[in-house]
Length: 278
Image (cartoon, rainbow, N blue to C red; front, top):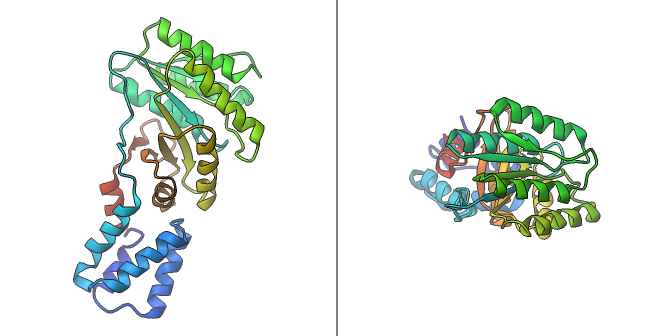
């Protein structure tokens, strides 16, 4: 049963007591929905009749989600450039590879750029993924200027007729202003070669409200066009997806559900809410 299912089933049979509502609110907050979202759901439960409860809660949840387009903005007839940004450990590099695999499986010519040059393991990881999925990877020397590697990648993508360019940027600590400034530099350098169509923030679904703070700081350095939430599996309730969209009004575009290359899918808000309610 989903996050809300047992409670809504109970509330539809009998009027919710104060103790029941307090327990429900605690569960909502612990599931990373945040206090504000949790309180609005509780108000919906208090207000609605039992027979209308599920539909009312569904509409409340929908109101928290972004109404923006959730598809990747593909530029017809020209290169589509995507920056992958986020904090180390969120699954950023793996998400870049999975996104590349997604596009290749849909017949696109894809180029990856390993611009997380401060972390040799990230470059090696992306090279390994590239070989596995059959996608070329542009890399620089160890500790090379990330912006220079991105410039080389963008130049090659245009020269060799690639359709999709995916750049794995360094997994910066959002509290380090100089590193965030560098992310802005990467964007400016790439845009000297080709426009950036998407900036996707990778959010670890297990980090809770801290992930929202990270996304807010990143958005101040580079305008975010979408998000990828990772580590949404059987042990993760994923309430942070709703909380983050409500806080940032940035659409969630893909969800990572496991370690495998196929454990990655476009975000479907209808099925997401349905899973919470069943």
